Image (tube, rainbow, N blue to C red; front, side, top):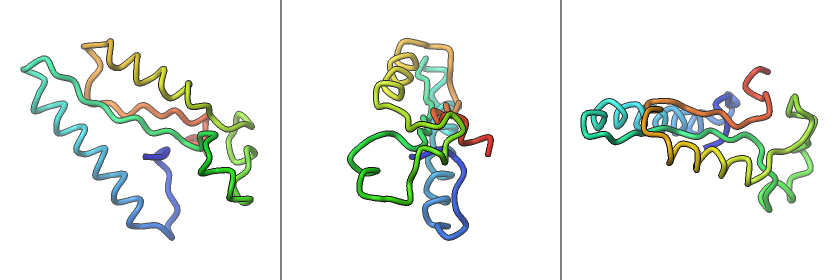
Length: 100
């Protein structure tokens, strides 16, 4: 899922993002007593092959002025996997895009 903000032109995409976040929250509450955590990660524009073919997607869209890197997302995954106390959270890996 990409970072939380969405375009009004893509209501189906916004609904799917909200559904995934809601599912993570549900599992966090339902599985907490078992010691199982559940979180969502919401990356923004990450430099992958998917971005290369779209000239409208520019690093200037991101407040930090660059695309995120895959290792910046994977480091959050590893952090969450090693932490048994963070649960029910959506971690935005977005270079400040959420603030826009």
